[in-house]
Length: 427
Ligand code: NAP
Ligand code: HSE
Image 1: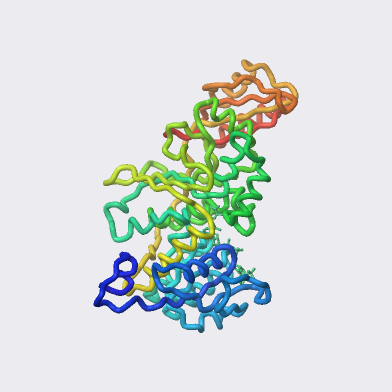
Image 2: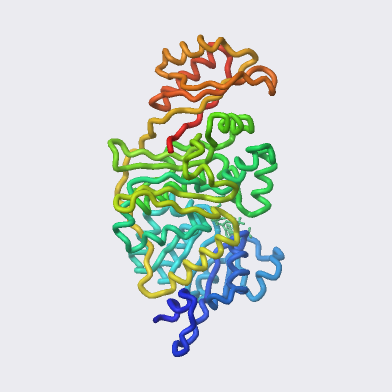
């Protein structure tokens, strides 16, 4: 039994020497990095010590968590501190990319919570890990508090995945959950998500869908071997969804959730990152607040479901430390080379549509106009006048996104309507 294995298994072997204290270097000492330092210091589970940390501003007071840690704004001194593992919690693409490649080239295992790094530079950093025969792990990059990627490591049958649907952005799920039922406005909910450390340093990354799209790229690589960047994908945010949309979704028997979804063993592989209406019976409909969840479609195990906290400094720190303990073990590997580059399509779905105007046209005229564009009404709501003017919602069928967009644009021109369309996905 190796010392690391004994520690991870949580039992004490009287003849084995105690696990060696793991020396950790942190790249970044913000919400996540400082939580790693606190947990490494406080937890009896595995002896670990943060020796050095890279920050921009070395003069800022960082409180007790930084005691005994050499803070530096010069990355070379941090990497020169001879750590057993580097934990990358900087965020963004550079200097994260260069520093991770540098650490791997020195033979130092790296663990990262940075989906931007993996989404945009996955090919390069994973190739660097392979060339250096040094582990690069990224369990915390997607659904930070749910250790599920590791469940597929070295299990080729379980890992025969052909699609998934997931909620991967905790901030957006937290905002929509808080807005639903009128507990908070979008701005109040976002402020609370920031206060709790869920949001990205630039929270527009969360609400615009960019963060989810990056995580989608990580999942596509991990489960499909697809080399994809967010530029290749259909990405939408939650900016235009309001409390009445969420209320009407409930009236239609469903909820609106920020989803990513993909399938590739079909005629045309598709992948999207977008909010969607799902029926109440969908397994992800019950995933609320900052929680995340994923439904994975596999060839041999049917449908596998994982869920739990998707964001938060403490859960992310715990996942990073588990990755660090594993990465320090000889032979540990997580890298997954991707060679396939598809052109991603979007799925054919129904749509949840809102139209609003000072005075809406007659419903029959609306149905005729939409029908002339190949869009069919399946269900409509009563007209709502609470915001002044008239608003109405509908579930409609349209086989492609361009078709729904051109139909709603025509309606907007004909009747001065403001429109919103989000996908309606099946269970
Ligand atoms: P953060 O609070 O903004 O912290 C970033 C840290 O990196 C800060 O200490 C900052 O230094 C340092 N830094 C940034 N750019 C630098 C540069 N060019 N040179 C030197 N230091 C630099 O961010 P965070 O919320 O901890 O997130 C870190 C990473 O974890 C991101 O990739 C994020 O997506 C990921 N993540 C976050 C969560 C979560 O729940 N928050 C969950 C999973 C993954 P200063 O302190 O001097 O500014
Ligand atoms: N801002 C991200 C989220 C952090 O809310 O999901 C976890 O990656």
